[in-house]
Length: 165
Image 1 (cartoon, rainbow, N blue to C red):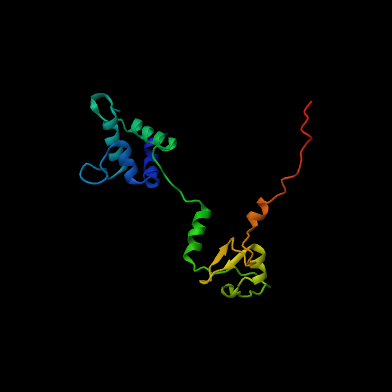
Image 2 (image 1 turned 90 degrees about the vertical axis):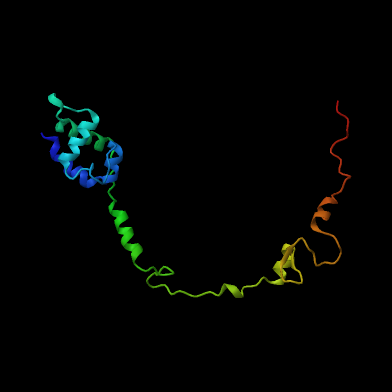
């Protein structure tokens, strides 16, 4: 029934910087707060929640803070359990490869793999003096390329007789 009792728990969940920024209070120094009661007094005066005689209303200030907390204006973060587990796993050294029981790993040396000459010729790739692969060169020696052969399609194909009645 007393909302002032919940302010300590909210202060533990929310960082001091967020409270200070939302209500326009200094987070450190002489004008800052040291207890939840001081915080309620400062917020009540700042927001104009006063009783008769100019005394701060701690109850309405506490309700104001609780509403801001519930509505998300006071950000509070709780790491999910999965994230905590992930952080623990990151601290452990990782293996380079996955290990599966009953399966032996064969190391492959991929630096010694070369293309066979037959594959190069079938794809139209030949190596120049530097050893670089160059596409479009033909080792046939006839001076023609694949694109020229495709361009020489027979031109005598007749589509129709030409009489469109």
